[in-house]
Amino acid sequence: MSEFMVVASLLCALALAFALMPLFAHRRAQQQKSQQEQLRSEANILAFEQRLAELEQEFELAAYSAEEYQQLKADLQHRLLDDVPEQAQLRQSKMPLWPWAIALLVAIPLAAWSLYGRTGAQAHLELIEQLQRVEQAANSAQLQQRGTQLVSQLQQQLAIKHDQPQLWMLLARTQMRLQQYAEAESSFQNLMELAGEDPVVMGLYAQARFMAQGRQLDAVAQSIAERTLELQPNNGTVLGMLGMVSFERQEYAKAAQYWQRLLTLLDPQSQTAQMIAQGVARAQAMLAEQGVADSSFENKGAAAATYSLRVSVALANNLSFDDGANVFIYARALNGPKMPLAVVKLPAQQLPVTVELNDSMAMMPTMKLSSFEQVEIVARVSSSGIANAAAGDLEGVLGPVANNSSELLELVIDKVLP
Image 1 (cartoon, rainbow, N blue to C red):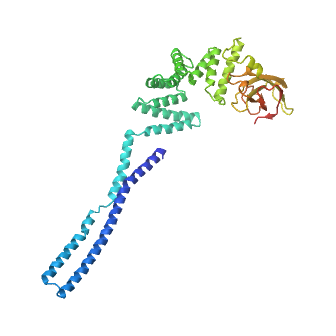
Image 2: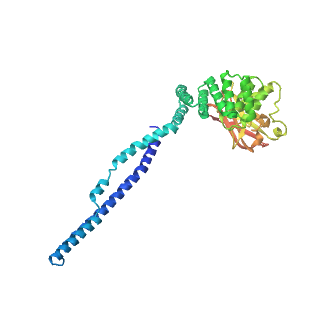
């Protein structure tokens, strides 16, 4: 049974309790009143019988004439009739409780279900449950099956009522996840008609159109992307897409600028931020090969000279590496993001080696050696030749170190990563 059915059943039971409690309370009060009337009636009858016996004794002693006796007896009987309720009439007024209880047990759930069917959100709750199942898909086959079911449910709901922006958004995002880019573009377009110039929706539409066109940014998507940045300069979807397009067009300065803006929106410790930072570094490297300086990458001058660390790196005697391995030597914040602040890449055959780390080696302008007072130095030998740590890599760590230390720092690579 779904959570909705459990909650709905509990609420119906609560409503029935509120409806039935007054009936039971009224019946209990009636029973108590009836018992009191019964006791009073019995007391009055007993008093009548005693007074009647006394009256007969007094008549036998000639205290009254026959006419007076009959008159007194008649008065006594009338008082008894006035004081004692007619029990038969009371019994006839006692209607059984169970018909009311049964009627309420049937009527309240039916009325609640009928009202909810007209005004409730059961369909939306079912969509949320289906969305959770999509998010929990264990593999691509399961994702396709559950995602297709969700798309079908959403399309049915939108066919009934078209103007539901939240459902169009959910439909378009699900289609993007299923790589149904043309369908997602159409859904985002319908959403744009409802939402107007919403930069979030516009950015997602531009991205869907970009993917639907085979990762090509046509004039329509370009125009919408530029308008999006006018409305929302920090739209991460558009910044990432335009950075990618600029890089593919070999417009490396633009690519670096877009990605640097995107980096300011991301958690520096996230995998996405590290990937974008690597993209910035690649764009900078391509500019350097072309002999072009990127004016947005401000890492030269006095800061580079002032904030520098000299590090001597050696390999422990009991360790060895394969031919073609590289060594990455970098500084990172001691308490903060783990993104490299300054990095050097060399062939591992050059070990032992002494290098200098400074601000000119930063991967992005806002994450430099001079930005953090305390850092740690890491040296990693990578057999795969890439910067990401992997099992079997050799590593050494030294820290904490002041970011402007003038001493020669000695670091030994002395452990194997599990």
